[in-house]
Structure formats: C-alpha cells, structure tokens
Length: 457
Image 1 (cartoon, rainbow, N blue to C red):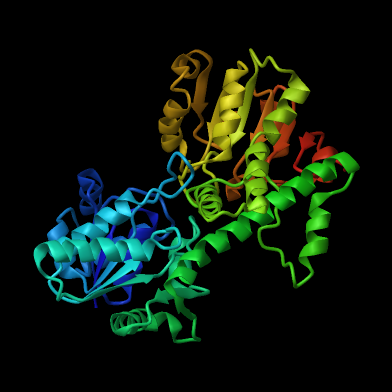
Image 2: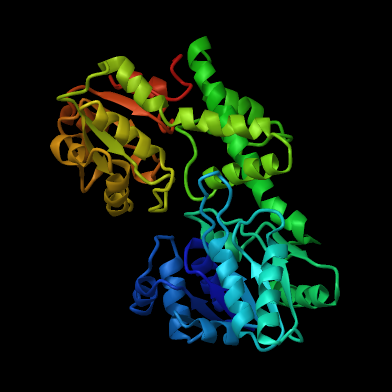
C-alpha cells in the first residue's frame, strides 16, 4: 500500500517507519527542510529507542523516504496520514492551523480517491472541519467529482516505547463516516492494519466523533490517576503512612490495577498537559465544566514544586552558595523530551533562589540547554552568573553537592554506590522525586532521605 505521512515528529516518524516495516511504501512529508535534511542524511530529529534502526533498514529497502515536496506527497499516498502538531493555543484549546493546512494541501493536489486520516490528537469535530477544507479546495479547482473520506485514527503511543506500542498495539481505534465513501475508507484502514490483528482482533470501529473523544478520554483518565496518587502521597507524609504500601494495597484490586499509581513530581511531556487543557476547553465551549480535570491540572502544577518545597524547607529560602546535583531532566525515561518536564520547574526555583545546579541525564542535556534559554528569557544572566552545568555521569554530578534531587527514573539511577555518594557529597541528602529507593535502606546506609509520600519510615 502507498502511504503518505504528513509530519515527522514523534507520531509521524514512528507511524511511517512502522508501516514501512510491514511492507508498505511510505512517503514522509515535512515542511521543515532542516528536519528532512537530517533524516535524509541518516540522522533523527528525535530520540526514541529502536527507531533509528527501523528507519535505516526501511530507507535501505526503499520503502521509506522523506521530502518537503507537498504535491509529490499527495500524489503518492492512497492513504494520507495527518500527523502534525496541535500545540495549545493561548486559551488552552488545540491549535489546528497545521492540521487544516495539511488538509488544504490535500484538496489542492489530489487527483483520485483519498483516505485522509487524522492521526494527530484533535478536538471532537475536527474531521468535519478537515472535510470542509478539502471540499472547499476541490470546489475551487472545479473538481468536486473527486471523492475522499476523513477517518479518525488516534495514536496511543508512549514516548520511550513508541515503536513497541505501534507494532504490538493493545487497541486500534478507527472512526469513520457511515456513508459510501466512509465505508470504502474503512475497508482501506482494515487492510492496512490487518497485519496487527493476526493474533486477535484489536480494532475498535466507531463513529468519527467518538474516536476523536476516545484519545482525550484515555489521557484524561491516566492523568487523573497520577494527580490522585500525588495528592494521596502528600497526605501520607502528613499522617505517617507509606504511599508505596498504599499503592500495593489498592493496586491489587483488579478494578483498579497497578498502572499509573506511582507518586512522583507530576506528569509532563507533549500529551497529558496539552490534552487536559484542550478537553477542559472543549467542555467550556459546550457549556460544561469538567471540575475533576480542572483539579487534575491544578494538582499537577503544584506537584512539580513538591521537591523544591522540601529543599527550601531544609535549607531555607536563600540557596546562595549551595550546589545541588540533579539526576534526570527529561519528563520520563527513554526520551529527550523536555516539554512540561518537572525538572524545568525544579531548576527554575533553585537558580532563582541562588543555587548552582549540576545535572545528569543520559539523553536530554542538549535539549535542556535549549529550553532553559526560553525559561530564563526574563533573566538570562542567572544561567551564566549562578549556573546550570551538566555532568558526564551521575557520580560526577554529586561532587561537592549539598543534596541530590532525583526527577527522572532512568535505570542508571536505580542502584547507586552509596558509599561513594557519601564521600563525594558535602552531606548525604537525597530528595527522591520518583521513590526509587527504600527509605529503610537509606537510613541504614546513613543517608538522609525524603521521598514522595514515604517519609514516615
């Protein structure tokens, strides 16, 4: 099958590489010439485990190509995936300018039946807007005879495990219009995804608006579990309970399960913050307040400061002359994504309080340097005068530190040499934002330890 992917970000590039790997001929389009040049030179614009090998092998097999040629992209694909960004607008709503621009280009250049797939996370009703834009362009050309159908096929990929999620999906959601064109489009989508259904049927077929809603609903549920556990963890610290014991106690209930019940420093990344904002905006536009989700967002914003609140409580509000080691910068392991990362809040509070920060992350250091320029646009001298620096390995970051702050749960941080840690640091103090260690073990090792909801031990 000939497939075109519009957009080569996380979703588009993973989708294109995976569909090429099962035998399709995939044309990946992006309007950013630098990104396309990087891909054509064998590089990747993002970090995602396993993606590099997948791209390389399918480019070599001539099943995967990259270009900025819009007309060629529309001509190539019988199925056109729109996988562009939908960043939050100033009012929290999803900005659809890139989605609609992609749709407009399809309408300008198409010459035969096209299945247009909304892969981006978009508000309910977006398929109708995409349909209208394409039809408007066809009418301008005097080609109203050309047929197409817009399908919703939301992605459910986790950064850091996106390739695995795509190749072994737990569900494939397809929303279609129940008319002749829509039923033909559904047939194309069933054939496209047939290789993923050989073991058992994973496809969930529904109307377009329900499919659009399903993506937001899934992320809203997961974000709610995270904020709920974070609030309970903060209460556990006050009442003398251990949130890890609580997690095991409630997670063993099959109605609840263990997923997304870990207390920490809050969620970040490209999906949860943006999608919660967009869904609450959709609700307001339709005369309804989603009070639970509004609270989920507020709790998460506060949770990103829980570690620095503990630091300031111990060391005082003036951190001048203090040095803090920071382990983990990306919003989660196995990615370099710094969007809405809790580490950005931690670094901001520490530097503005006068502290020096020495950080380690296996992947995200370069991206951190870029985003900190944005975060400190109002006070760029802080970065130079006080200082954010990076270390080549975790132990190097500890040298002379007043405390260690753990923000991201990379595997490399799970079993540190505590004796060496104590010799390197001014004082063996750990603020663990991911509850990587057992408090009793830390106490026995002579380490002053504060986790999230585990400070009764």
